[in-house]
Image (cartoon, rainbow, N blue to C red; front, side):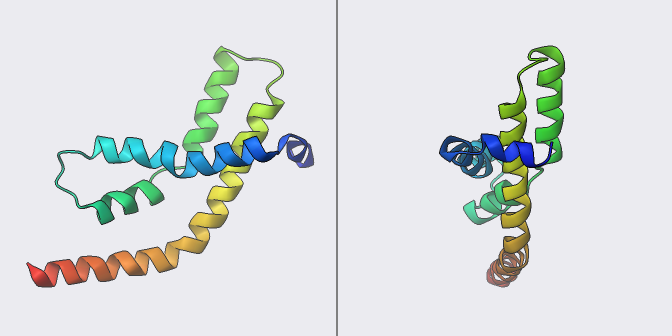
Length: 112
């Protein structure tokens, strides 16, 4: 799957990829952390940098193996797009958001 994936990239694929990296990912993480007494900044940090990529690949391969053995090019191409965007935006945001979070934790611990 190389350049043929690009044939399936359109506005809907991009919208799904962006939603997958934000709302679809972060809301379940936030829900799963209810009751942990973590603040919103920590929950957001975990939601943004939590496990990614490899889980998408695993889930799509299981789906293809069990359900859709043919005509899955669009599905695979959207997963590829999502992972590419993830690598790019998480790579760009890793240093600034980690620095922000480190300062946030340091300020929080000084207050306690």
